[in-house]
Image 1 (cartoon, one colour):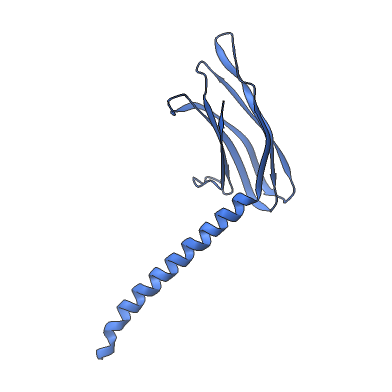
Image 2: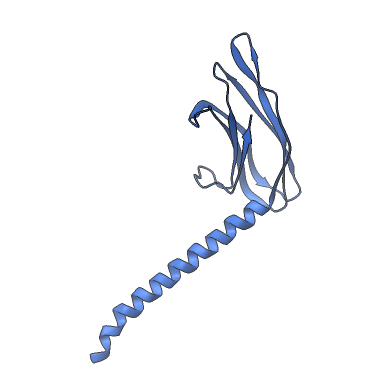
Length: 138
């Protein structure tokens, strides 16, 4: 009966250990997924034309592992760092296979000149936690 006070303490310690182990496994998964993505030949041709800045960001994204779902988008930012209204969804793919290369083509059209674009890659539909990001100065 005197040893029952150990039960809550051991339970709390076990819960903390499970939480730490789970977070560590998740961090390793994200790191591994990020290393499986290679982006190359990124270029931008956004120019002022008839009062609007128009053009696109192009490049290639290659994966070295399978993903059940893969999506990517490009968000544009002004010189103050504020996110602009323009978002280009450049990849939405179910069952992406290792070795596949995806063409990135994000179109931009706005009266404001973007100074930065960020490519963000997700591996779950509706996720807010990217597995890869690439910042581009324009």
